[in-house]
Image (cartoon, rainbow, N blue to C red; front, side, top):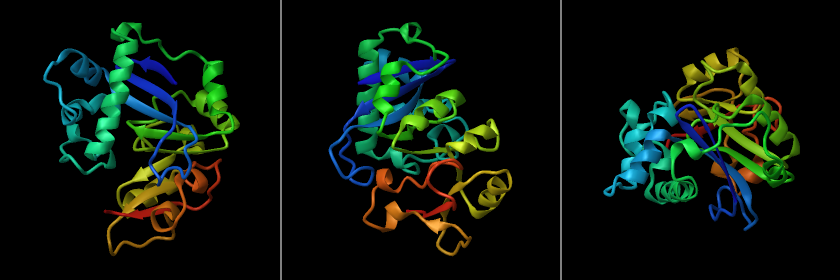
Length: 238
């Protein structure tokens, strides 16, 4: 089940489905995941007969904004975890299914003032993974308040912590690319998710899902200032 909305030149998809990524969940129960695609990616996959899976990354500027790991911002394919072929192929399939349902960009509905009841029901007592692909701040703030209030747990991240409304910090982690951004984001009231190099040190805790036999769904520490966690989270670059 998918719920699709657009805002300006960005498409946001809420997908209620099973995932077989054992790091995310350890069961075959469905979860809710969000994806942000650009209008350029939509049109590329819809209209270019030679469109390739990796070609989608040439058009990730509108949906990834100034994320330093996006190809549009000059990083090579593979820097972001979504650039691996398996993940990219899943993104292509998701966008293909949207194109099949909405055969023109203008036919995709705009965000309504509140989430549809069916989406709220899908999120009820379920895990929500905000930001499976693309930026998360395209989702309206009041939607976060409504959807997280019914969810069993959630995780979410944004690279826009230095630009967006600080209210997003209630629900999302600030994605920090080094210990300097980590310190700045914390000073601005965010909990952080930090990519560390080998010799970097701070007071954060290491990601349990990366070093223990625990899934993101069960851990759910990456849930802003109002979620489950209190300390910020580290993960070593790999």
